[in-house]
Length: 63
Image (cartoon, rainbow, N blue to C red; front, side, top):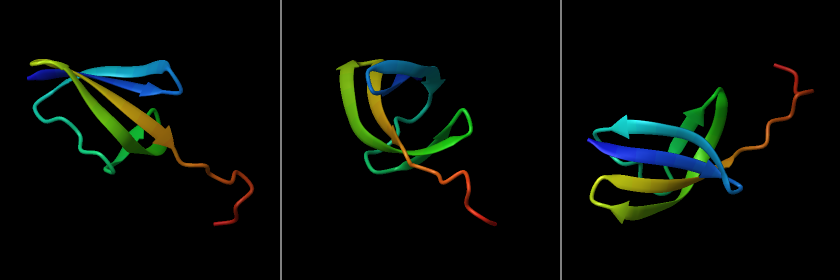
């Protein structure tokens, strides 16, 4: 298992122990927000930093 730390705009969003590291370009959902993995950086054997960018959602969008 590896420790994966998710970042967005320099802020830590979430830290998780996972069996697999997310891939660049992979879609992801954190705290109810949809986003995309921009970059995965290996710090050491068991720690990864993942840069995430959230998608803009129009709150006035009709369903």
